[in-house]
Image (cartoon, rainbow, N blue to C red; front, side, top):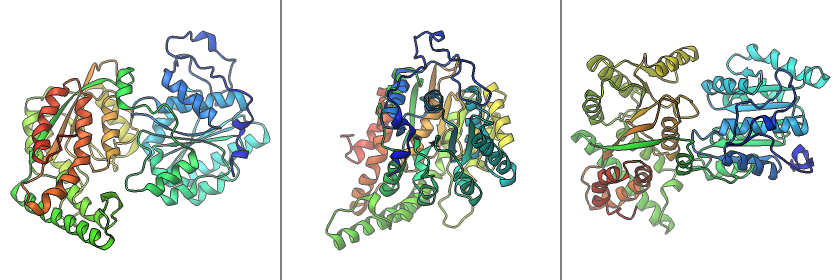
Amino acid sequence: MYLTQNPVQQLPFFRLRIPFVGESKGRYQTQQTLPGCPKVPSSLQLRQYQQQAITNWFANNGRGTLKMATGSGKTITALAIACELYQQINLQVLLVVCPYRHLVTQWARECEKFNLQPILAFDNFRTWQSQLSTQIYNLRSGSQKFVTVITTNSTLIGDGFQSQLKYFPHKTLIIGDEAHNLGAPKLEESLPRRVGLRLALSATPERYFDDGGTQSLFDYFGPVLQPEFTLNHAIAQGALVHYLYYPILVELTEAESIAYLKLTKKIGRSLLYRERETGESPNFEDHEDLKPLLMQRARLIGAAENKLTALRDLMATRRETTHTLFYCSDGSQEAGQRSSLRQLKAVAKILGVELGYRVSTYTAQTPLKEREVLRRQFESGELQGLVAIRCLDEGVDIPAIQTAVILSSSGNPRQFIQRRGRVLRPHPDKERATIFDMIVLPPDLDRETIEVERNLLRKELRRFVEFADLADNAGEARMKLLDLQKRYGLLDI
């Protein structure tokens, strides 16, 4: 229905003008560009996989999803597309939609390298509404050639921004950053249908427990385009650094083991009831009733008390280590208790007070200006570490990270993928990254629960094994996981 509004379909051919690695830069220099209009930085050289992704996006009539490993250059690839569209069809508006405010400022820094002067449309409506409406008017009157707008998901769905969207011109490109978030119903409904040029960016576009939302995302932006750029590819081509992987196996306390066993039995009974009702073996992901139980179980594992002991033992021998990120649990095992920061505070106390390690916490409540200060202090080594919950999962670019200690990961594979990408970004002072991953050992279970546990563990263990296999110390890492595989008969992973 909307493809007829797509300017790319009118192009007789497409030839990328941006040099690749190893090619001459000067050969592709373009004429002087006005301030605020897209221009490729003179230093930019695209890698082959980036060039192929751009070519395939144009070949798909200006629609598509780039599924690339975190840290492999999705932002640069997207901005290169905007520059090419400006050259070929006089693109007029670039609209970037991000899930978080800190990503807006990060995108702004990248946009400025491409000669763009973005409007940052988030938070207070009054601070950007007048600026946006004026620039769109100037664009339509011919006194301005290009407008760049970077906004957040929450601003996008608001009446203020929606009222402006209807005035965006035909030649607008929308880029959905960490686009898996945009598959949520309210967000997907707010995406502008009149905009024909669409690009989604995500290392993990498939939505967890939400096939319908995943399909809606692809229906709007277009399918995943080749090449899919995996972690293995990214390391092999130098887009991400090599790493060492150290699983740290942690036992539950007696009280935690009892709670864990009760939850696992409830999950097993729920599955058995569903199977008797439907006559089919239920899939965990298709079983809505299981979600609360699985979340409780994940919180219990995430906040396991012995992780603090393991952390103390680990860091007591690494007090001089710098550029370290600590990922904490975002919940506690007690239902209804408002203590999502409990583990974060405990970790900060162990590191900062007991061990004298220079750290600061980094959460969703940390103001943007303070985040920028912390980022600079971390990169310079003034701070040895940052203790974070979820806000460093998606999109945050701190290449100086050399070591990560993962105390907690959710069951969602996206979180694990995003986090490892954060740590493996290349940096001049980083030859190789190091990752310590705390894995909770399930307690001894009875016959009623061991098969349930085996099925629950299979998917998570597959992720650990995959990451171990790609590490420089693969043999050592796999040996640490072997006992767990043997215990549950999962040696086939």
